[in-house]
Amino acid sequence: MIGPVQIELPDGSNVDLFLLRFSKDGTLLSRQTAAMAVERARSATDVYVFSHGWNNVFADAKREYTKFIQGYIAQREELGIPVPDDYRPVLIGIIWPSTWFVKQSEEGPVIAATEGADDMAEGSIEVLLDEVGDSLPAENRAALTELLDGVELLDESEARQAAGLVSGLWKDRDETSMGPPDLNQILMAWAALDGNVEPYDDDGIAGVIDENAPDSDGERFVIAGGGFDPRTILRLASVWKIKSRAGLVGRHGVGPVLADLLESTARLHLIGHSYGARVLLSAIARTKLSRSVHSLLLLQPAVNRWCFAKKVAETGRKGGYANVPERVERPIMHTFSRHDFPLHEVFHLFVRGDNLGEFNAAAIGDTDTYGALGGYGPKGVAFATRPALAAGERYELDGGIVAVDGGGVVDGEKAIGGHGDVNKPITWWLLHTLTAR
Image (cartoon, rainbow, N blue to C red):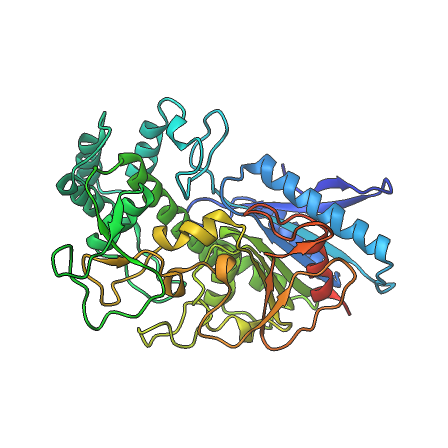
């Protein structure tokens, strides 16, 4: 449709929500609606832009945006939070293609072989193979299809071949300035996700660790026997592709829209969840903006924890989003939680960067280098950590980045109980904290 959708509020009134759809390469598809939103922003006091995470179709995103907006406004009224007499908000929701396939439970890209993964819908491996293959050169696609078709397990030689065929899907350095993982790293991550690793025995037989490899608190492992599940490499490749797509949508699509919105005098507030946080970070980092974004709230961001660093790990290079804090007026607030299984337990297996000195034996538990911002908080940059607070309690906003620990208990329940547990009073209150006048 052209123009905004209507959101009904608890008091019976309505507000407009402009939903802007983008293609896989970041092309803005809702051009007339975007023009209306930008025009509305010219007379607004505040503009809110929401960006969803993976596995959201149009209806999912609209529902989540609606719930967040309704909760945010209801909380404002409940707590008696004042707004200026001339308060004129504009609400915008980003819709980007983050769903891989729809089968029964409408699973998106699976970041971990969680419970039920062995019961994937019939034909889903073929659908995933087709989705991954459509971004590969024709020769690689044919070879991958022939290699994986009808196979339950691959041996190490076949797995190495499959890893080589899909490794080109890793092509974005936005977060850490690291290059793509080598084949040894891909195989190690693949084996770990399959549960097919064993502790490294430092006797020179099981493998070799470079003496210059970075230290890690995690136990080191080598690949055991047992074969490689072909579904796992497709999950790895799908996560890489969605990760890259989020960056493309941010740089080429959302960024120019933000630039247009900042031509107004309205305060611009950005709220992103999961890979939707990456959409917004890429938009801010890669776009020439006339002035600063007012606030940035990242809910369980699926980006590397070194993304804001001035010097990443041992590479000596800046993180891909090192310039973002200086482009945001208020401190950046983000949540992280030990209860977020995808980001706390497996992100560092799926999204490893280039080799930092290891060979054959990998630090599977190396969340220090490869951990997610939404799983562990930031590294390589000054920040303050605060526990998640109940609505109405005051946050101390120190420095440029505030990491909000959602691993505790608030009002009798886990503050952030899982990756998608981000649309609730705790997170509405974070946005109120950032937007308060």
